[in-house]
Length: 77
View 1 (cartoon, helix red, strand yellow):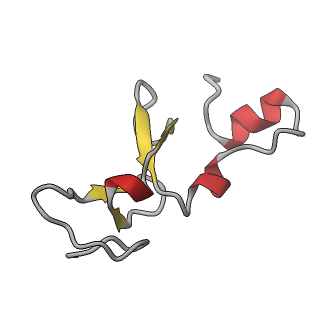
View 2 (view 1 turned 135 degrees about the vertical axis):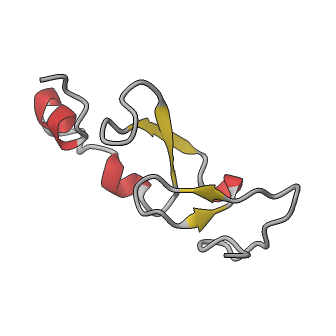
View 3 (view 1 turned 90 degrees about the vertical axis):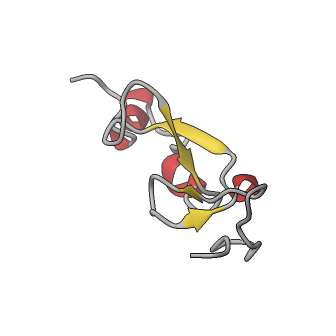
């Protein structure tokens, strides 16, 4: 992959390629500025998530907290 799958910007030494830990797409820094705790990746540190995947990761704020936690696999059961 030579360019960001979201904005099509070419990857260079100055514009590095990152991998979204949700979808696996190659994205640039400006299209992947979000980090979330994803227990299936590494429960001890935040993982990079691209702009397209953020709506799938951010919980519904109207849901009870335990539901959001379970959906994101953040609960330590």
